[in-house]
Length: 216
Image (cartoon, rainbow, N blue to C red; front, top):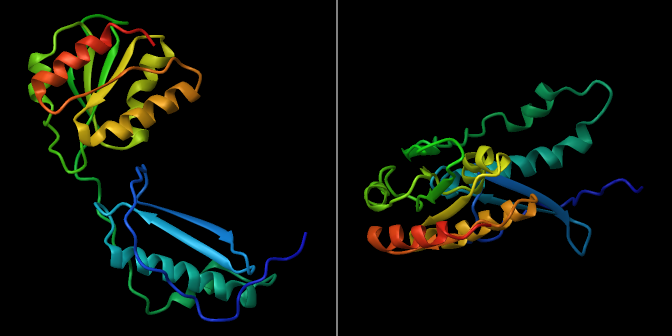
């Protein structure tokens, strides 16, 4: 296998772009070779946790390390020595998640009753689905989770493992994410859960009630 080659020119950064991506991590960095053999780095970050300027700084520092490592590699190389390449560089900041990942709005009436999982829209308050909790009838547990696929899957895992019925839903802002989570549930081998989306609490409670009648 040929050794990877590193471009000798200065690293270049492309323009910042917005994309619809949900991730359980503050940022995700991928690397691939372009048509000319150069290494192309792509960084996707959550703007609610990391500012564009800090994300750009992280990308620049990563590039600086990658460019310096081949020349500094050797039997006596250490991590501390490699990090000297970043001496004087600012420390990028990342904010903590503003709210808990999971909130139980209503427990199940009995073990095995099932789960209704509502995804909170990005930036919405933790109690945004309290009105739905008051208007939704039934015996299933009602959960509210942060808008990350990993948060929803973690919340649903016990019910799925036990074979309990599951419903996903929320306001229209999370429709794509809800369907994405439903697809991932199906990809793991469970039945694809129904998804209910509506703009008002009353409409959402009605849609969830109808969806609960469907068995995945």
